[in-house]
Length: 149
Image 1 (cartoon, rainbow, N blue to C red):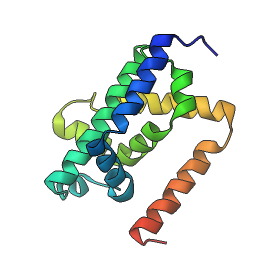
Image 2 (tube, rainbow, N blue to C red; image 1 turned 120 degrees about the horizontal axis):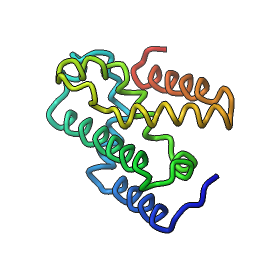
Image 3 (cartoon, rainbow, N blue to C red; image 1 turned 180 degrees about the horizontal axis):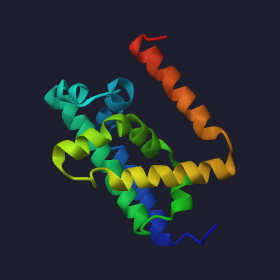
Image 4 (tube, one colour; image 1 turned 135 degrees about the horizontal axis):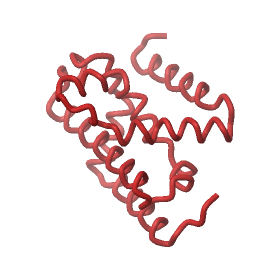
């Protein structure tokens, strides 16, 4: 485990503060409760407010992933503190290739995807089977929220 600088810890705390902003909390709440896209049609059917929530949550976590990638936040410290970014990636993963194709940009959400992959490797090294267990918990929660038992 590497040495964490004061600046890296401060950045992590600042990122946490941004997550607590009222509009961001509202967006995150809606995203985790209601956004379960399986196709671009699911994304296209969103209201303007819902679409803004998706963009806010996903762009926030993609930005954070970029900061981690650049060493602004220690990766181990980050992984030890949150898995929310991984859940966001898991949620948008089914539509990621279609979004990349539609926008003709293969790099859309790339930072988030790569960080999620590194997180899975990191987590499986520390707690084998935990990613599968997390997937199962998310699937059960989605089924309960959407009424698909």
